[in-house]
Figure 1 (cartoon, helix red, strand yellow):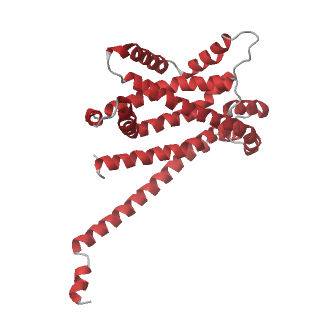
Figure 2 (cartoon, rainbow, N blue to C red; figure 1 turned 90 degrees about the vertical axis):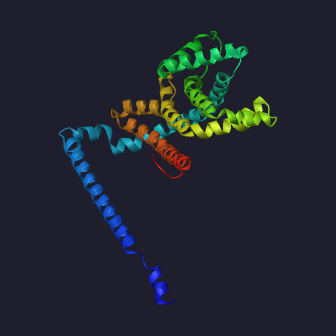
Figure 3 (cartoon, rainbow, N blue to C red; figure 1 turned 90 degrees about the horizontal axis):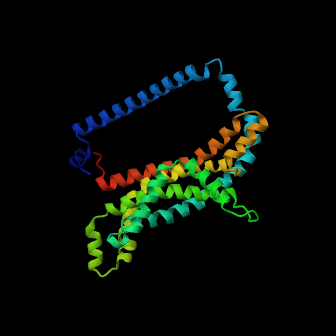
Length: 289
């Protein structure tokens, strides 16, 4: 290797200056992050931990013995929440896609269907979920005869969740369907595809890809709201925590239930953030406006 080649491989003075600047910026960012973390820790210590009532709060909400004693029963209830979540997600996806497709149908002959779908979404988006749970959980059994077997509270709670969340998710799907450019439909029809195949093979895949972040956010909200089935008497994580709280005269079981829901939600939240950033980078070709 000649001296000319070695000189050509050496970075220029401009590049060396850029590297030095990036190093200074990195050191500065790390120093600021460390200082702000220390300041936040001091503020939390002064405003929460160093208060006169912290010991009482710690004993009431963060008792380790009560935590481990209540964990088995709360965990069993949490498994019920997971089963309800699985059935609710499946039901919401099916019903919401049907509603979204009905609301995007064109032609006067479909007006009654469009009106019913629109009225459904308006009604259940306007009703609080807790009221829907009460109406379904206590209203549907009232329609049964005296000798008929009662519908389990878990089933009624799942139905209420599906009814409410389908109204929200259907609007997300409808927005995705309408965001697909009309030229995609026209191109598919020009190739001989029927309306159903165009919707299934061309429109829906693009629509789902566009609204996936919003769908994942609705799924995160649903993972928390499955705990509301406890108002109907189902012994899920929240109701189990309530039972354990009455048993120990301590609120730590509620913290146990809350931690289980947080542990369930965090991976989904991180996945949503990752997918949103990936979608943004792909659409903007790496440039953030």
